[in-house]
Image 1 (cartoon, rainbow, N blue to C red):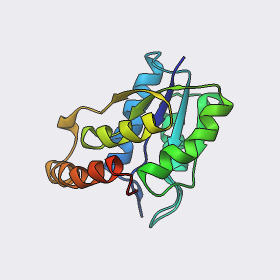
Image 2 (cartoon, one colour; image 1 turned 90 degrees about the horizontal axis):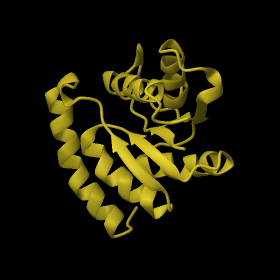
Image 3 (spheres, helix red, strand yellow; image 1 turned 120 degrees about the vertical axis):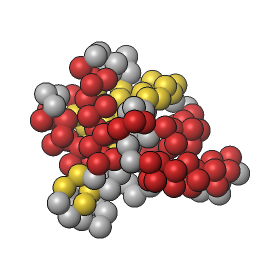
Length: 155
């Protein structure tokens, strides 16, 4: 089977950022469609508590995903750590196949990192029309150097 892995995004002072909410709602829809048997939410505490993982778990519960299907990785602060720290959870669940959920600009780098962990990877992004344009542009611009760094094993 497959584990759905949702990569974190900011928690704002007033709650989950729009990016975190979109990713999580998309992951919940995939879960309800039968795309995975568990959902691993990734992300530690950033500028504002709670952890990204805790905020996502709450959103998943509100979307009807049962507690027994939710696993939390709540220490990571970046994409590499998301996947590094999710590894023990995936191993304990016997999962080697993942469906990574994030924004489209983020998925090529996440796929590279996950493959380095020996995982079979599929990806899925929320519809781009639901996102604000400028953060998406900044994300695409940032990912070029990020992918290069992964390929060169800089980070």
